[in-house]
Amino acid sequence: MDGLVNVESSQHDRRITVTVTPVTPDVPRGLKGVVVTETALGDVRGTEGFYHYRQYSAVDLAQSRTFEDVWHLMLLGTLPDAAGRAAFARRVTPLRRLPGAVRDALPAVARAGALSGPLAGLRSALSLLGAAGGFRPLYDVEPERRLSDALAATAAVPTLLTALYRLGQGLEPVEPRDDLPYAANYLYMLTGEEPDPAHARAVERYLISTVDHGFNASTFTARVIASTGADLAACLTGAVGALSGPLHGGAPSRALDTLDSIGTPDRIDPWIRERVLAGERIMGFGHPVYRTEDPRSRMLKGIARSFGGPLVDLAVRVEARVEAILAELKPGRELHTNVEFYAGVVMELCGLPREMFTPTFACARVVGWCANVLEQAEDSKIIRPAARYVGPVPPQPVPAA
Image 1: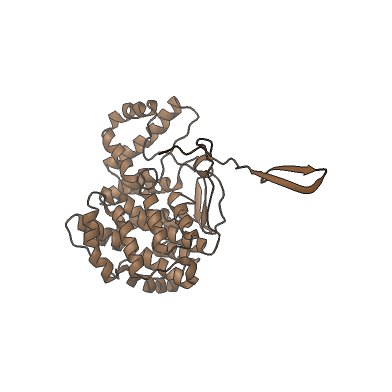
Image 2: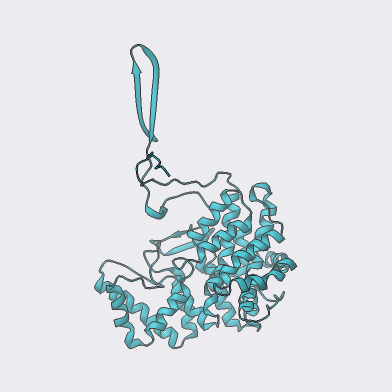
């Protein structure tokens, strides 16, 4: 029912006046659980602790496939065979190199964002990339051109982020290498040294596990902008802005800060009890969808344990004690580690600087954003929700100046 209908009629007047009073439906705050569209890209099944990319388990893909395979799956729709993987590599590898106008502007972007870091700089850099690449409104171009823009953006983001980081450290950017795959090349551009294969594979598995994850805040932002018909760079710039928030992608380094604050095993219980009793948030724990263990956290925990060491031992003990203390102090409230908790541990062990944790997340998620933008571009309906007004009753008389 769309509204309340009042019908007025008169014995002497056969005209009927119909007044419709709209009724705004009640929806959860933050649109939690509200279905806003259909997608063929994947889903998160929170009560099962399972998520997938298209028809494949995301964790299985992270265990057995390369990042390029998953990139191909999300943007082109299929998992490639060996020949398809090689053809895809030939297509995207040259796109890692930045247009000259963008490369020349990056020092100024890095200086302007010296206090904000590479992720803030990425917003400006993506706008430059879109302008230099001639990205046109999605509404005005054919699907093949949209795909070309998406491939260009996803290939360039690691180059942009590592260049911005190195410039911010007073170092020269490192040009990409054509012979290295996505994850290894990212680490190479970050450090200037060819990475340890175990570290490259660990980072690659993390990247695969974070390509997409349902209609999270940044993905929804990208799709809202895409629904207006804007160009791909505009969609990605908005998504990066959403990702930068500490309640979304900004948590891996904060989760690691938790372990630093605890420091030693004997401090675990008093530290956790104090925070739980104060009602404070424990970074790296809890998720808005999962009601069981986050499968990404489970996988990353296994990677961390394969490296071992004091940091891993502390993380495992903290995880166990948080769950036990919550069961004691807040019975019935389940709180498990999310992807950020062990992601921070793994990235620390692989030598990534903490200010690059969330940018590394962006290197993966840009593929998911682009897949969602391409899907949204096929629908010409603009996303335009409503809000319920709760201010003073209008119209009020306008006071005299």
